[in-house]
Amino acid sequence: MKFYVILIFCLMDQVYGLERPKNESKYVTPEYILPCHKTDPNINTCLVGTFNHLRPYLITGIKDIEVPSIDPLKIEKLIMENGQGAFRVRASFYNITATGASNYSVKTIKADVENYHIELGIKLPRIEIRGKYEVNGNVLLFPVRSKGDFWAIFLDVDAAAKIFGKEVLRDGERYMRIDKMLVDFRLQKSRFRIRDIINHGNVIGEAMNQFLNNNSEEIIKEMKPAANAAIAKHFKGFLNSAFLKIPLPIWLPGA
Image (tube, rainbow, N blue to C red; front, side, top):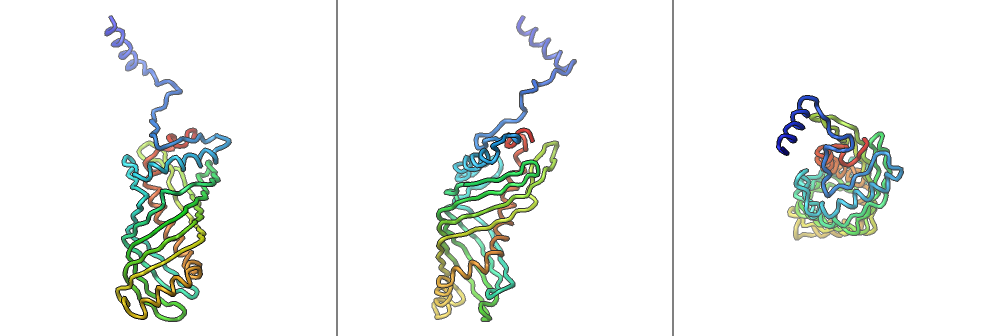
């Protein structure tokens, strides 16, 4: 008898097109996402919790949306070019490994969810970076050519990011795509070290190391716009790879 009742309901579903209950979502929320409803009056506080909730998952990476681990964070290449001021150089960095990003904490968020604009304030206690570099240009009117390995450490980093997104439709699903991203940062202390394979072991190589550390604040100030642009370009691609795999209703119900 039970079998026939089930069969009748299945036939009715096909014939009359019985619908899923209105309050039953077709989406399954993964454990690494804490959704924030679009109409939540405390949406900014909710999003702070959402971004901080992601931290342990970002350490190991999130396979189902192809997000790699952020600690260590691997960056294939960053190009910084500064054509003004005392430091007119083009600096290329390769095979970069950054550690310490998993200790981030999102302190503030200001979101305009109607227009998909998000401003974040982020704190990073310590970032250590290693990789290879190549620099060509002029420093204080002197020509500079340097290539080799680099190491840098940054302490007490305060970063700010502005995300300008828009809604897009892909395969019948709605997603947010980042069209523009701006990044800025301040740091309390920094330390640099390079191993120049062109000038290694001579007076020029050692002088460059001393110059980098004795003038680190000025160098960072001069190169900051180029660094901001390069970092924003990288993380725009990084974040889009995730946002374009998670439909809007999963992380922003009501959108």
